[in-house]
Every structure is written in structure tokens, then in C-alpha cells.
Amino acid sequence: EAQVTQNPRYLITVTGKKLTVTCSQNMNHEYMSWYRQDPGLGLRQIYYSMNVEVTDKGDVPEGYKVSRKEKRNFPLILESPSPNQTSLYFCASTGGSYEQYFGPGTRLTVT
Amino acid sequence: KQEVTQIPAALSVPEGENLVLNCSFTDSAIYNLQWFRQDPGKGLTSLLLIQSSQREQTSGRLNASLDKSSGRSTLYIAASQPGDSATYLCAVRSYGQNFVFGPGTRLSVLP
Image (cartoon, rainbow over the protein chains, first blue to last red):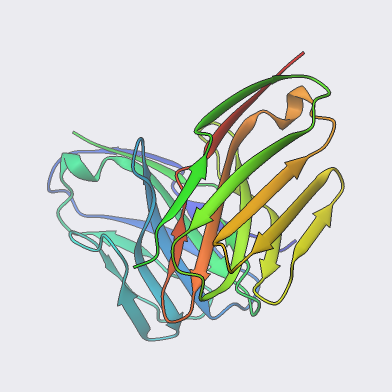
């Protein structure tokens, strides 16, 4: 089954404690993205990757890092999380026709 | 910079009604437009993808149209059901730009 998986699904952490949210897709897609969704602000792109070792900033990259060492994986790294990064995070994988497939989301709370 | 809006922000209809959701975008040079459904606290489910060369796409009770010149897309839902209650999002992929999402329309279908 074609899918995008994210882990963990829920995470509560404290300010400054580094964390990684993993994302994996099994569709052999080259393009992958990370979004955050906040009430009143909608979905905003954090980072995207056009292929292995190729990443670029989206609209709200501050405070986040990504890496793309393998085509299937695209982890999101928060090296020093702050409360304003409390949000619902989505990973997406995009096929050749630019149709996006989304993961189930990760709800992050930073206290 | 591409901006996407959706009207109405919220809609409540009785079961069985046909309804139209609207999506507008400011830059007509788009690659494609995708409609999604999102249930509360859940991920995004792709409903329809319209490439820039297409005028409409249909899937079951759903029909999406695209008018690039006027910067508009509509999602038509026939014979609405309570299970259609969700937030509906449109996303635009522009040439040379990333995906931009609209704020969504929250639909409630009353039994």
C-alpha cells in the first residue's frame, strides 16, 4: 500500500530538548515536504526536498532543519524547540504529476 | 507571490443538498490544483487533482472545475451526506514556486 508514515504521532517535550520527527514514503517519490498547520494560519511549508541531498527552505524554515540522505526518508529536526513550535506537523510526498500524498500528522507540544 | 483564498469559510447544509465550494488564486500561471479533505485532527486526503491543461475532474459525487484565466476553482458535492462533514482545502502548485494552500472551508452536513 502506497503511504507516507510519520513518527511519533504525538510528542510532548520541553523547551530546548532536541527532537526528530521521522517521515518515510514507499512510493519512490523524489519530492518531499514538511508543513506545519496552525489555527488561523493554515498549512505552511517549512522545508522541501527535490531529491536526495537537495533541500530548500519553504515559507517558515526558522528553527527547523532537515536532511535527505535516502530517497524514502525526510526527517524534520528541531534542535532547540520553543513553545511557538507547538503545532500539527505533516510530511508530504509528491509524485510525478505533482499530486501530494500526506502523512497522518505529528502533534507536537513544547512546554 | 501566490495567494489562495477559499469562500465560504464555513458552511452548514441539510443532508441531500448539492453544494459548491470556491477556491481563488492570484497567479494564473499554475501547474496544477489539488482538493483535499481533512477530518478534525487528522491528515489530508486527496480528493481530486486538476492539471493546468484540464478544465475539470470527477470522482463519484465530487466534481472539480478549473478556470485558470479567472483564477478560480470550484468543488461541487452532489447529494451531500453527514459523512462529508470535514474541512476542504485547495492547494495550488505554481511554476517555480512551492505549493500554497488555502485556509479551507469547514463543511457541516446535518442529518
